[in-house]
Amino acid sequence: MNVNFYKALSLLLDYPSGELVEHLGVLAERIVHSEGWTQEESLVVGKLISHLAATPLTEVQADYVRTFDLSAEHSLHLTHHLFGDDKNRGPALIDLTEMYKEYGLAVASNELPDFLPLVLEFASGLDDAEARTFLGDAAKVTAVLAGNLETAGSVYAPVLRLIEKRGGLLKLAA
Image (cartoon, rainbow, N blue to C red):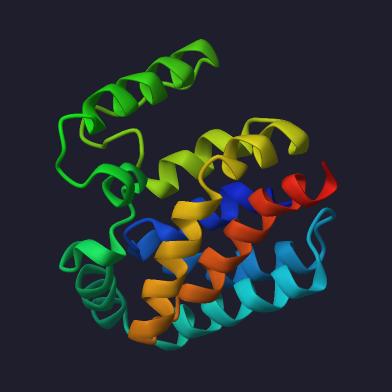
């Protein structure tokens, strides 16, 4: 069974649950046998999965909160990196919500539409060219976020670089 690249990253970049940790071995095995993944992507995601599997859940959760929730520079809310708390952020969030609705994605009311795992969930329902175009619009933000995570020594940084590359590849081909 193929594992969609964007869906897998959506799961891995969301708050780590016990259910996720329980299924990391299955996820890793499916990724190895999935089409559409480069060797680099499989290796990078495999390293993150290995780290998550080898670390107690409470430590993984605490690291996630320290990394993404307590540092604005590491926020997984993409428009935060563009607008901060500026009033212009609202229209961008509304536009994204409307786009999701047009494609039939229902957004839970407890999460902003620019939350990277949700963005990746949306991308997982698009064909590859559409997903790359969609993520290409966010490539500069994911590059900044990846750089911030690299500076902090985060295990999540290489995964952000993969997202940046997927979005950036379309621009190289154009």
